[in-house]
Length: 212
Image (cartoon, rainbow, N blue to C red; front, side, top):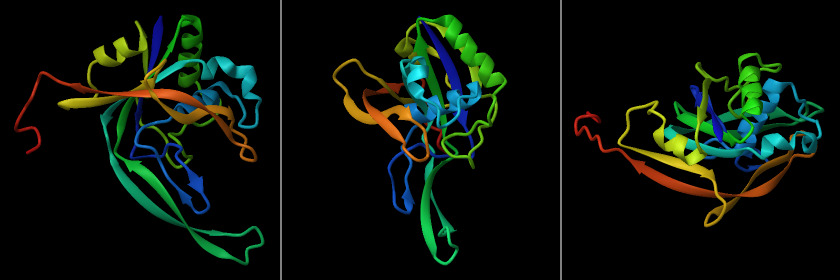
């Protein structure tokens, strides 16, 4: 078993959530559909492609370690209707200054190596949820041997913190989220459910002056 590791950091990130009418929200951490979209862009898979032909992407076991939670930011946009006669205000939410460790597990190390190469030489521009959110470097951290949870627990911290939160795919005893992409088409986006579990990691090292 092997795990591909990504560092997801940027001044602004925005991950899925619901997008009803003029309000576009974000989750607290990167979504599986968002990270799969990033991988698909690096491979050159168009948004309107049949994702059933690329099921090996969705079948990757996925996890996130929250290094820095970030702050919720609300932005306002003025948009116009297609005929240009009507203007309206939209609200878009972002995560500001957040840092995440993303992990994707597979038994196929060659496939992970293919993804790593694509991330170094992406076909399409890469962004963290929205086109206005390009990632800071380094994005690719490499491939580690081990299981998803083992790697997420053992990988050195990216940020100094006394605790970290892990959110990952669960075989059982989890909660459902609608976050497995079936179609990225702007005209017909569709997602399936996956089971997720959450775990809090506490560090043995505690610096009482760290917050001063």
